[in-house]
Length: 480
Image 1 (cartoon, rainbow, N blue to C red):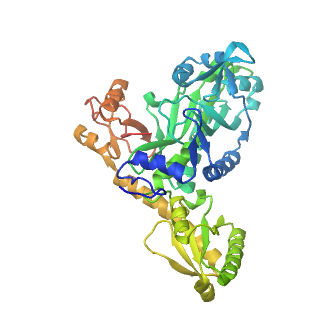
Image 2: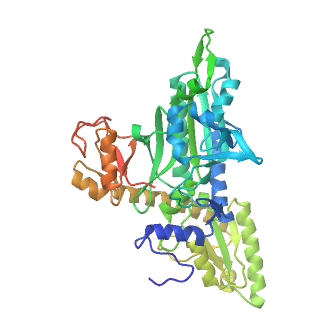
Image 3: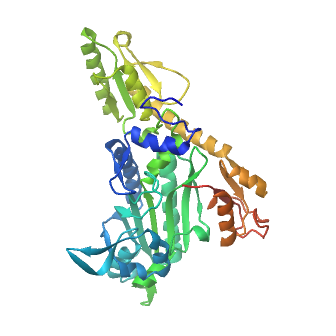
């Protein structure tokens, strides 16, 4: 299919090519010089800053404090929790030489920080009065990826990781579920991604966790994206690192710990949930520019139009709208329209001499069949704020409708194999790891989660026919 240099491969032709082309052409990211690394460009980083601000506010509102822990972790720390080191061993980057000589002990470049934070928690906690300890870190982590994909799986990525310690299981589980709810809210209300929260099966748990919970979003190719996780770690890490406290009776107990994280993978989720063949479609709450104004005038008329545009931009900015004026003289209005369509700006405004004389401005939405709408210039801040809110809700409902159209409740293996090729299956499963492995080998589908709001149900496993073991249906799908 012929395309100009700004175009992207249609999703229906090759979704993977569409994604790989779009993230670079929309100026979000570039591949880094080392395999699996990425350079996040300003436009892409601004999206991350907006995610970060919304999430950081909620983290602090729930009583957590930000801290920072070292990038390098002694290898022996990871080995203290056997399941943890086994789970991460294939992904570890290890420093063996520094300062011109071999190190006495290799240092692991952090894949996650449970171990080093556990060591500090053991120093800081002595009494029940020190609990709960609620920490969060904004940082980078390194996990060596054999098949990297920008934003989704890279050797180095940015994230936040929360780590907390509690007096008992009940309080730790409240924390685990509270943060899952926070992630669900950010995904739904900010990114307009209608995720399904739920518990992971034992085979999909975080290494060293007692329980793992995730939020799962459906991308426009029908695959799932795990967009955030929250783990109840029990006393596994407390035992390994000596995180103990004296209870109110003076007896020593192990603390119960949790960890939870959301990363720059969320940007990939936004791209694949909302994007189309024309490029990005950004939800207004995460758009670096919510409104772009394109002045259309030349010569004597140009100065008056540009003055009016600058005045309008200042009014929109004062109303809390992120606005950008595209007054590049070297490119045509048509190029600008296509450029901002590719980059996913929710609303575009055009204003020329006739519009100015009429006291109006033309508004075009990134999606929708209304075409260009003339709006009153005097009322523009109020009108555009309402239009942005409507567009945010439109994207959320569109994503909900798409997910429901691709999710099927079923009981037969033949139907299962057909459904997971393009979407998700709600089905019963025996819970045996061997059966999970068999399903994955046959269809590439994995159990995404046990949906939190699923009704109680029992019956036979869709694959092997053995009795189901979870008391509810499991959500299966292919995943990134």
